[in-house]
Length: 204
Image 1: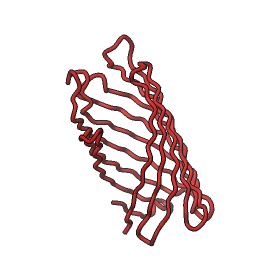
Image 2 (image 1 turned 180 degrees about the vertical axis):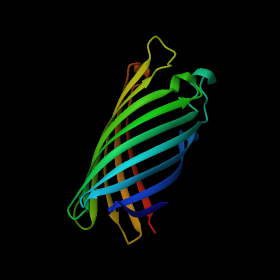
Image 3 (image 1 turned 180 degrees about the horizontal axis):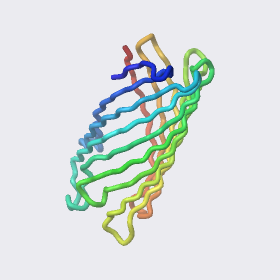
C-alpha cells in the first residue's frame, strides 16, 4: 500500500508492505517469516530521492536446535535504514547507496545480534526494453550473547546481478543471480552460496 502526495512542495510517497516467506531445505519446510515494512521517500530534486524505512521480521524455524534456550533461532528482528537514489537516462536508470542497522532478539541467546549493512546498486537500461541490475553489500554481524569461547562475529559480502523486462504494461519478468560469502570467526559457520532465480510480477 502506498500513497503519494507533496510535503513542503516536494513529492513524498509513504508505504506499508507485508511479505510472507517460506523456505524449503532438502524438500522439507525450513522456516517461515512474516515481514512488515513501512517507509517514506521524498524527492528533494528532480533526479534524486531519499528513502527512510523501518522493517520488523518475525521468524519461525521448524528445527529449534539442540537447546531451545540457547540455539533456537525463532524471534524477531528490527531494522532501520536510509538510502539515497540518483536517477539518470530520463529516470530509466538509477544508482542507490544505502545503510541499515539491525537488532535481533531470538528465543535462543546464540542468535541475538547487532548488524550494520552498507549497500550499493545500479539499474541500467539496455536494449529492447531490457534492464540490467547490479548490486553489492557488506554486512557485519555481532552476537554478543553467543555461548562460546568468544562472542561470534560474521562478515558477509554479497553480489547480485539480474536482467528484467516488462512484457506488457502490467507484467514484468526478472532473472537473478546472487552470490554470498560469509566469513565467521567460527570456521564451521562460514560458507559460500550461489542462487539463481526467476520471478514474475504483476503490477496494477
